[in-house]
Image (tube, rainbow, N blue to C red):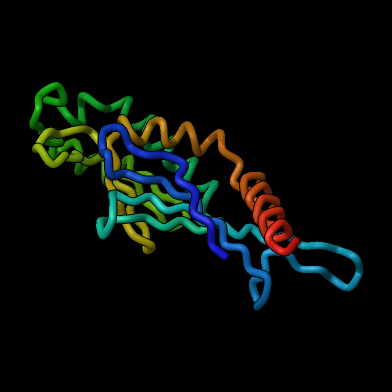
Length: 184
C-alpha cells in the first residue's frame, strides 16, 4: 500500500510539489515490519521523497537512504548561493536576468556541492511569463529539478525540521486503524 502526502507546494513555482510517499509492504523481501525468531521486531524505513515541477515535468526522486545527505546538501547550497547571490546574478533585480557565466563556471569548478550522487548548482528559474528568479538546480541519477530560491528556502526549513521516520510510523498507525475499522 502506498500513501502519498504532499508536504510542500511552491509559492513562486505554483507547480512545485514536495511529496512524501510511504510504501507499506506486508509481504515480500522488503517488508516494512519483520518479526525475528528471537522476539525482535525490525521496522524498515519505507519512504521516499519526490520533488516535482508538475505533471510530466522534471522530478527528483530521493529514497530514504539519501534523505539526510540531501537535506544537508540543500541547506548548504542555499547558504552558498545566497551568500554569493549578487556575484552569481549581477542583475538579479530585473525581470529578466542571467547568471554571470564566468562566475557560474568558477562556481561549478570550485564551489559546486555534491553528496551521495546528488549535485546542487545555482541556476536561473524562469516562470511561464518569462520572469526570472535565482534558483538551485538539483541533479542525480534519479532525476533533476530546478527550484526557485524563494521556494527552496522554506522547503529546506521544512525538511530540516521534519522527521520522516516518526511521520512514517504515524502513517502506519493510521493505516492500521483504518484497516481494523474496516473489518469490524
